[in-house]
Length: 266
Image (tube, rainbow, N blue to C red; front, side, top):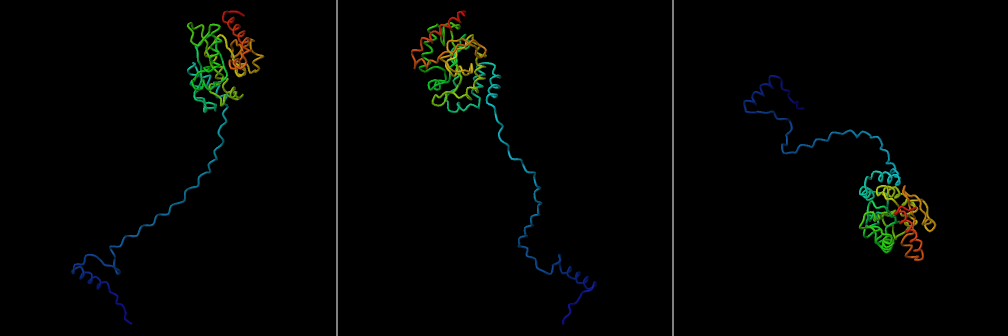
């Protein structure tokens, strides 16, 4: 058996000195080094798992909005007729506005002694953005012209100011619902307060519902009452007169009653 020799201290020192004399400049290990081999990628340090987070509560239901309360607040903040129109245009809780072409706010002479409140816009009103411009509106103009009043009078005291309970046309010209009337009532009350007429004319059942919370126009018409804090006269709607010409005599009597009030009569 061949025994591998073990160098002593002095022999190893002498061998190292001899290699230095030969020009050796670095030590060589027992195994060859491949200097063209790519270095191994260092392993990614282990990361600690994310700390558990507290469970988030499921989102609750949307808060319920009372549209009448929202309308009351929006109307109360309107300091002018223009402000009120803007508040109506911005009001998000009435679905009628989504199907309407235009907001139908008013027509005639602001500040007139007589304010006429109709029901809701029809097709012609929705298209033009003004109340009472169809056949019923043309009849209304002739009725009030018969007692010297109009939308664009020569004298301001002979003017009329016109609006509706609803500013948007209901689909298929259907009657407004009770919820729609209740929603628009605060705007209408503020409209009357800002226009500040001497007298209010409630044209038709819907207007009486909004102003008096009563219906039955053939029973209510011709009898003076109070609506929105103003002396008010219920009258049949001009559309009804187009369908029932025999009712024109009673409408004429109502117009004469209004004229007497304007002249200071009872």
